Image (cartoon, rainbow, N blue to C red; front, side, top):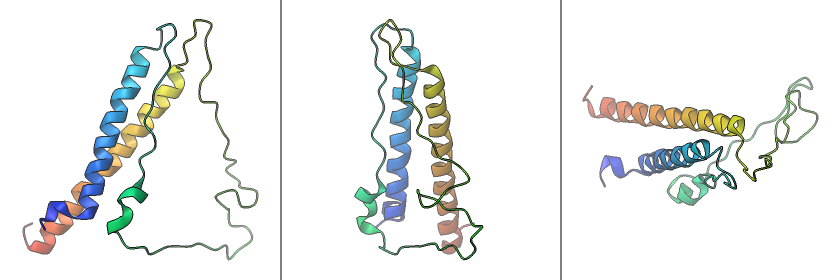
Length: 134
């Protein structure tokens, strides 16, 4: 097995390709924001569970040791107050694209892509160091 065929590199490469494809769809949504009757499109969320077969099944759990700790995931009253945002609103022309929402998605997608590429680069550096090729 080649080093680049390791499951972590395959998963990161798939994730980066997903972000590239999503960026194209989001760009189409922004470009057609004024097109009457256009409905925005998006990809379904990238699912690591489909790729997770090659990874270990170790799990991590958290526990609150102090009552002042915040909770996440709907347990208790979170100080961060997660809210559902409206997906889009339909304009009188029948267009379902909100530029604000699309630009938020574009920014989030870009940051996630940069995180994946950074992790990919760091993993390659770790392997090079381990092989003695700095």
